[in-house]
Image (tube, rainbow, N blue to C red):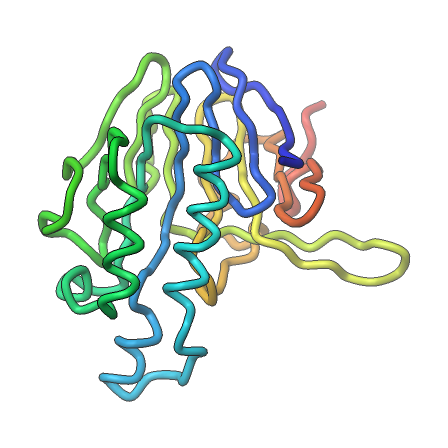
Length: 226
């Protein structure tokens, strides 16, 4: 597992190539914005046509990360489903995969803006959850609790590599908050130099680009620490 280790609120965390976050001390895997059922919703309501197997791809990636980390706890940071009714309308094979992944694990669904109601599957449904120094919710608060871990914005960053622009989903973190990238396939993203993100993060914030070998860079669009 080619993860990048970093420190946040004195805790050692691992940014996985897939966009998942692993907290070894808690044996906890955190994923955000799976948007399961996105292609089904788009097809039903006349949206953009997406590859029909995006949910299967996302769940396969999650199964691989669970196996690699041996996590015993899982937090899904909201927008796990692309619409409230999709949790029971997924293809039978995908529902079976999801319930199989949950077996024997302490699984928490955090409420998102796409899936605000209780999830009618195994696990616990919460608005937020605190574990030690870290506080998990879907959307970053204007004035955060130190140790806030959120998703929602689907951040991505661009790195110039050998004269080519390389854009990847990314983690963002500073001394106070940590924002995860979207984990779901075909979820899109918001460039981290967008004002919606730069106004949340402090000068000196870092971005960790996902991919085969995660790498850490200064967050684009912010002034470095003096």
